[in-house]
Length: 541
Image 1 (cartoon, rainbow, N blue to C red):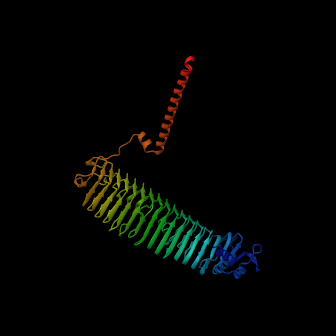
Image 2: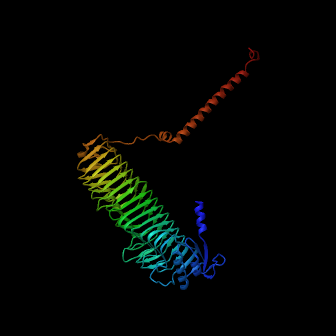
Image 3: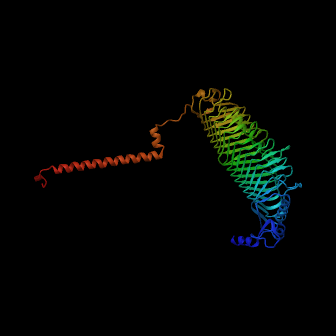
């Protein structure tokens, strides 16, 4: 590796240039050369460092345009010390300020672009193109392909900041058949307004990977934050979406694949993700907290697949529903998911049209859903090792489907007279086994019309408040009035608490040792006193 590193630095050269540099052949730090001269000297992988703090006059901007385009076309690194390039006075000629095409490893490093009314950079058929440590602020782009455009290649935004830009009938970032990486990038307080549904971030047939990226406080009245068309694949690792205001944060109009890992989604307004058929969405170790989707589902995924494999939390979200796939056959497979304190108009999870829902070790707690926590129509449910606690209305409501529920807990779920059941099944095949029901219900915990199989269920209440008479007789090995035996506090503290047990053992040992040595001391003292009180003639008997 050291040989390759030495070869890289030996093969490249550093050139220093300035706006009013000298017309010489040296281009070094103390005497930088002109833009025109340095362009003629560079070779691929060389480094051009532009000295100065500001470029903003029309003629100077044209010189900078020529330098960027000529140097980057040769695969050169163009860098500065956070130079500000103000495009307010730039003459708009209908194409991007920087156009890089059909080259390898061009790089723009440490610039501040502001005041532009046209596209700033366009990378086409570029391999390993990089924009790093750069700022894009207070630009006002109207029409065109977007503030930054990437097409057919692999590019990267590394440690960049895109803040307070306005986009009209265009996009902030557009991707066309490209592979784009965003690493440690901040996209904040940008505004987009479009007559069409062109999004702030727009992708067609592209792959995009976000790492340690924050997207927050962006807004638009009509357009989504992200829009994906045709076939697109996106991954988010350790990212944050917060305080965005869009009809949809992400809209897929095609076949898309999304993966969210260690991602936080909080305080956004609008539906977070809407997909079309045959899309795949997966979440792992992520948190979805306090989002408001209005009259839309937070996740609307008809005809798609939704997976959770590692712990995820859906906490205090508001809207029509949390996860809705109604309309087409879908698959929902959740493991270690927790839905806590969500307030929705319909349900937490809703499916129909021969869909399948598999829940393993999931928790539904204190959700308020007017229909039910889980709504299923003509679909299949498989629920195991899951719990439903203090949810409003029925925990599970199903129509003309199948459900297999085992090793689960239903505790104190409350509803109105029609929905006061833990499980409500109409014309369905229902199988419940090895489960526990707690709380009182005037009509019983299970109301089922159809085939019912109940085995080894435990109820905390009386028979008449646990199951209706019509299905009570079909419950095999069921037990009633089952409650947890409360142990004394002293017993609980010292037996179930290992620390308390150790403390108790130590105290008892100290007390016993103290008593033993005290008794030994008293006995010896008594013997000594008796010995001293004996007459002298009896001491040597």
